[in-house]
Length: 287
Length: 322
Image (cartoon, rainbow over all chains, first blue to last red):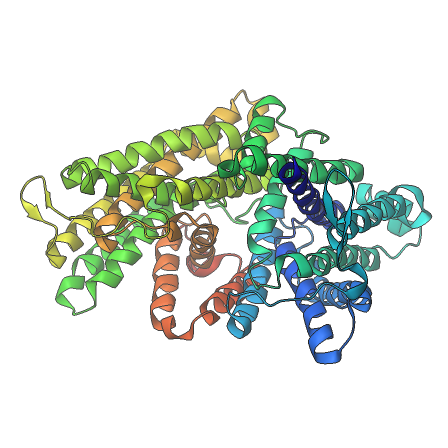
């Protein structure tokens, strides 16, 4: 049973990364009509920024948790201003191709300087060690990742669904021209939204740095799984992305315990099944 | 959905004549390669990728469907052909048929699944499906995992053509490429191709005219996947191995890049794009990962400033369809 709980925990952790990343993808898609292929590369940048902050600046994990998303978010906003904004009005596919190109550039540059092997990032002192819960041993850092991601996801949901800023955002998704007519700076909102989505990816990167090591290609395979998560959950609902992300992580964890050979493929197989039964995805309307 | 190619010119007898002239020039140039001293292996490799890109272009350029998983057809056909040649010791022509049949079956299955969603979702689904296959091939015993299938015998095509001679192999690959290219050309200019273009331009209108658009898209997907499989089967004879790189997502990305550079929805664009990208990889092989960075930069530049591609720009300048 110990092994089962351990795999469930790993599943929850992967699920929190899926949730944070698919949440960002959904928010960005809502405003920019772009599927951000660079999301995995920006997740990786988040982890690298944390690594640099610690090793070059001596800045701790806690500050990295705040600074890395801000730095990568600013980088994302520069990308949006200089490149993505020129795609307005073009077919969606060009956004996918452009961000794929950006992902290749970012990953390639990091691979040149850091190779393909992983760099270690130590767990902060306050989160070292573990707790005995009676039925299992819980490493504190792993528990922290799950709870903190959940809080961030719910905070994002609250921001978008319950605040005035979120209302503007949702209105601009529906009808940007009309919202502009009310005197709201929609282009700036689009830039900030991209920054927010990218920041969430970078945050996931920082959280994963002590668990998965810091590698240039850490986001490359992850983003494809997240795409499958997005296809399963649909991008129509914020809560839907969060729940689908965590649920798929747990299913993946269970698969690792019961049938490890299929743990890499289970999310894709589920995607196929969902497409066969309900082609619009679990929460989505027709695309 | 806005159209991918902004200027579609009507197919006139003159346009057909232009295209045939360009085709004959291309065929003659390629046929003369063994007499010029150009390294034939490079050209053969480029021809396989050119056929793959043409097959991919059939789907995006004429059907408006961006598949981000075309490597799965290349790789699957490659593995199956390689297995048939090496383990079953089949002659080359049957080996190629096995590869094509495998890609045909795979494209029926994956097409049935992915055509259910439109636009951007279609791209994500094809990418996820090819990643699924990648992991399957990584674990399946017959692919030999990381090593791949190596040392594939080339044998005698139809019992007479010795494929271990580079010149003979070159002409076999060239004939295969030209046959595939002409087939795609025929499909594009058939009534089926016209309907496909109509769906790309305005799907609701095509539906209102009574076309079952999903069936057309499905058929285009199967044709494209099967032809991509043909390219994969030919590539086995050139590279003499079948490995995981051929099923990896980066390969799917390269195919997209080739077509984008040459020109989406142009007839000759994918061929030009394939030669440009393969040549670039050859010359920059010593620069390691910078090749990836350069490829990414080309993507960015093409999307931002050069959406018509090389052939698309030329065609636009001369007001011809090429």
